[in-house]
Image 1 (cartoon, rainbow, N blue to C red):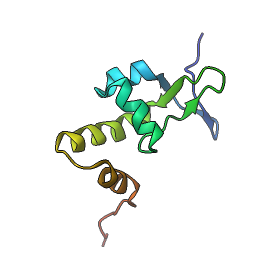
Image 2 (image 1 turned 45 degrees about the vertical axis):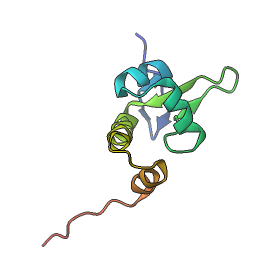
Image 3 (image 1 turned 180 degrees about the vertical axis):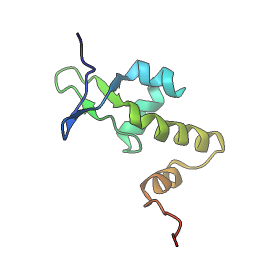
Image 4 (image 1 turned 90 degrees about the horizontal axis):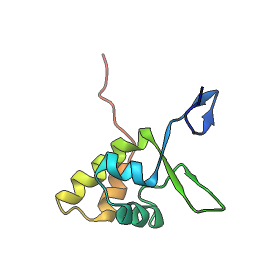
Length: 94
């Protein structure tokens, strides 16, 4: 039995995808994913020190989809970065 590759956090294994698979899953080009990594917009969860191969967590697909949709609306990368880094707000209860 083969376990998914990933990073262990508190005993949980995070499933990861290599760059090409992540590109196909998110409809972002490999070139753009490399650029987003370079500018710190969407960083892979793991980069192999020997090969430079990038791996992304499946949980990052949502952020990649948000980036793609905002770029489709011509939103500047700096603004997208601000949105992604903003704390999430939750409606008041009660």
